[in-house]
Amino acid sequence: MDKTDKLRILKNAIRSYPDFPEPGIIFRDIFGAFHDIVALKALRDLIVGHSLLLEIDLVVGLDSRGFLLGPMICMELNKPFLPIRKEGKLPGKVTQQKYSLEYGEAIFELQTEFINKGTRVLVVDDLLATGGSMAAAIQLLQSVDANVVECLVIMELTLLKGRDKLSVPVHSFIQYDD
Image (cartoon, rainbow, N blue to C red):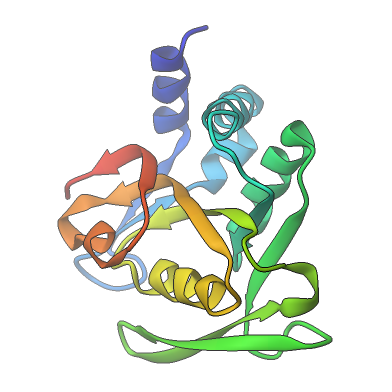
């Protein structure tokens, strides 16, 4: 099966829910791909195949769906995984980054004991929308002198122009313009 077939299988497995969580929003749900083993294997092949092209030392997954994707990459690349979590969820020494949401603010945290100056990082998540959480993750990693090589997402909502807020390359497999 080639890349085009894998992308088609993955896209067909992603479910769309109109008017969720509020009217006018179309929620794209990656969990349909996790329910379909053929789609999940296609997803794994796509993210691992792309990640093999990058020179990285560490995979960082964003709270919370990035936690599902990052370990798939780590196992195949033999690289460690580190989560970026919402405030108050990580023990030990952490550093923080505040960011804006559509309706307020949140704080991301990163355990600093597991990352060194110059570490080459791949940041993964399921979706790039407005770019606020991904931009905060980049700022957080750069604040501890990590080098963010790329942000890898499965889906991108292109109309929201989240990519424009990011200071590093972004790779998305599926783009939605609605």
